[in-house]
Each structure stands twice: as C-alpha cells, then as structure tokens.
Length: 166
Image (cartoon, rainbow, N blue to C red; front, top):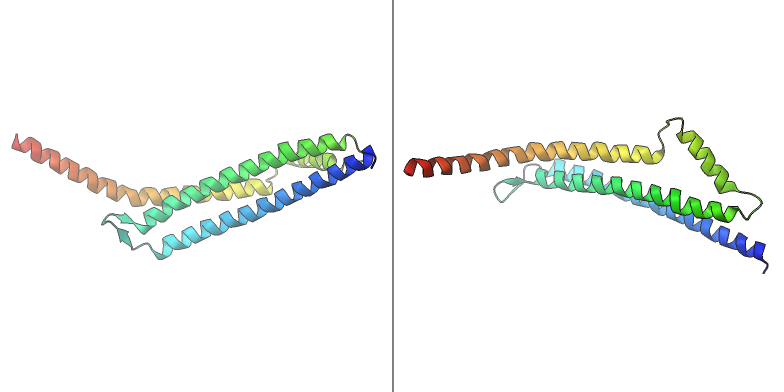
C-alpha cells in the first residue's frame, strides 16, 4: 500500500467518524427534546400533588426542566465545538495532502453562510433550550415564592413571640 492510498484510507475513516459523531449529536438532541416535553407533561399532569406538605410536583418538575434545558444547551455547545474544531481541523489537515478538499470547501461555505447572520440549526436548538429554561425557571419561582413566604412568616412569628416574651 503506497502513501497516497494510506492517506486516503485515513481520510475516509476520519470522515466516517465525523458523520457518526454528527448522527450521535442528532440522537442526543432528540433525547433532550423528548426529555423537555416529558418534563412539561409531567408538570402539567401532576400539578396538584404536594409532597411533605409544602413542595408541589410542579416545583420539582420545574427544577428538572431547568436542569434538562441547561444540560441541553451545554450539550449543543460542546458538540458544536468538537465538530468545528476537532473534526474539521483534522480533516482539513489531512485534505492538504489530497488533490481535492471537499470538507475544507464545505467549511468555508458554512463560514460564509454564518457571516450573513443566519440562524443555524444549532442556534435554533440553543434558543429552544434557553426559552424552555426561562419558562421552567419562571414556574419554579412562582411555585417557590409561597413556600418561602410561609417560611418567612413562621420565622417572623417566632421572632415576635421570643421578643414579646423577653
């Protein structure tokens, strides 16, 4: 096997790995979308359930929603970084030794497209994750506020009793 054939085989192997990685990214995003939707449904259908006399199921599901949405955002960001830097850089370096550079040209085209301030699919995923995190945070705060107010009222009542008794 000559050097050119070896370079071509390595290139094909790495290009296949990149495509598999991108497929795994799509499957992971599908998982997060389902998890956010399931959390939302859980919050809707268990809203009246109260644990320990104070904590509602809605509060728990809202916290879970914040967590899942945050993890989704970080996952999209890390996959994008790995795809752009690790795989694109390595493939471009291998392509320097080949007569044709399809991934390098594709990457240049994507950069030009992005420079026009157009939303990419990953930007849309991150936007959805951020909107859902904000929604779950708002629900979390609205559910937590009465618990905090009741607790503050009990502390204030106890302080007044102690001061009144002194």
